[in-house]
Length: 446
Image 1 (cartoon, rainbow, N blue to C red):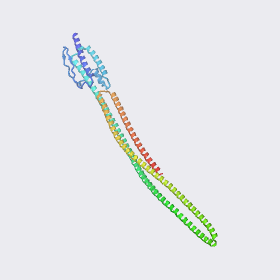
Image 2 (tube, one colour; image 1 turned 60 degrees about the vertical axis):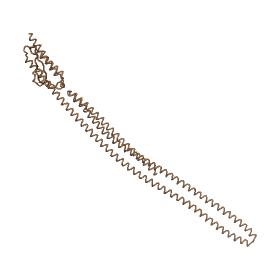
Image 3 (cartoon, one colour; image 1 turned 90 degrees about the vertical axis):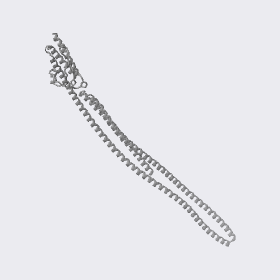
Image 4 (cartoon, helix red, strand yellow; image 1 turned 180 degrees about the horizontal axis):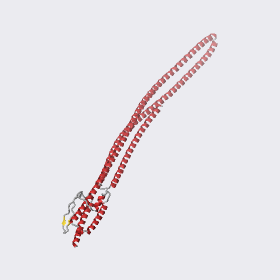
């Protein structure tokens, strides 16, 4: 009985050592225990001597125990936890140990070695099952990586296509705006040339009118003076003729009176002399009155000429005002040209901003590639994770990628709206300047 007890204790220590070694090998992480590792387990002989254990590989025979039957009935699933496997393994081992203790007399060294080999084979099967699970997980990870890469590549291609379409639309808008600017510039130059030609014609007509009025004034003054002088001469001549006739008549009458009577002649002569004096006084008064009337008429003509001179001076002032307005229009034209130059500079800056927008697209693409690399790195390190964790990680990556794409599209749309509003504002300002120039031209013509 003592020998049987000693053999039982030896068998327990040997079997416990084998169980601990197998259990540690099973519980080890696939990342820490390499495939096909050789493990040496010492087996004690009945003479209390240690013998070298058999060196076996991870791919040995099969076991016919309850664990083997459970394994043959159904393979381990990928979502089975290792703690459950450990509990089932430990419970089966303890039950077998209880059965073996009852039959210790029939146990031999060969049986122990067979049991040990069966345990090692079962461990190899578990290891192969774990390798298969790991291979399936790796294939699933590779498939998810390929799907994510293809989806991200498709989204990037779509984003680049939309960016190209937006760029083409911007180029179309730019061509349309350039065409409008060229048309407005041609219209502006046409209005400028017509305005300058009309102003020059008006200035030339005003100068000719002033010269004609000055010539007419001088001619009118000369004609008035000549007319007054001729009228005075004719009147004086007629008066002299009438006086000569009266004098002849008086002389004849005097001669007759002298012949009639000397006294009566003297009286008549005195009366005739008095009448002659009265006539001379009357003629002198008429002459003075005629001279006064001539002077009044000359003053009237001078007043008229003064009024005409004031009108001419007023026309000269109007001409100066017109010249000032022409200078103002030229100043406005210069300002319009300066605004047009500024608008061209702004257009060049807009083109530079568009190139900066392309650089921003490339930066966003580089950022997306960097994010992809950052998310692929944890996927590569998480080869032992379950399908649920991989799906959660893929969903988080897709959500983050959608947020990046949404922010990029929002920034592109804001840039496009800002560019269109700026172009519309420039065109409206230029149209307002053209309208103001047309109104100034109409006011000058009025």
